[in-house]
Length: 210
Image (cartoon, rainbow, N blue to C red; front, side, top):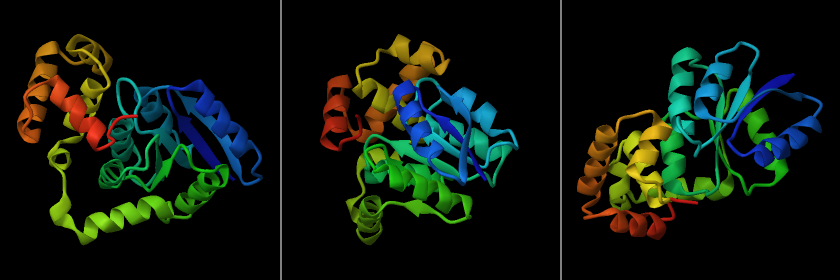
């Protein structure tokens, strides 16, 4: 029996995944989490065989939770869920130690296949995402400026692009306003941008926000 943890801040997503997994005789949902901190704590239990983490959660993101989980349980298979099957998001997930990357738009059968695949010790990526990754490997010169951002910088860039203010970001990430301002400055410098409006345009252009 494959025991699964689902972490997503949207209850409807968790409920939908739970229904899909409940139809499988070899998979059982044993834990749920609504944020990255809770996910990292519950994934540390030996009762979980596979963790499914939403890429974009408030506070500690899916990538942050993944990093914490890797420190606690280096061999626990982790699947990252994303609203968008974008190459940059997938690359960050796998570089962070993920075992699978699946778009939330995928069919239920793909989620189940991903769980079984990573539980067996293999990596899972859909054909669509695999093609995006292959293009990136074949043409490294096409790398975009945002790929130089750290995971925290990338997270804050996406939050700014989604309309979050400095104070809101600081509260959600439990960081100081000054720290967020420093990250924002680094993002602007690395991307060669001038202000938040430029960040929004960049994120929309490269489909980095939902």
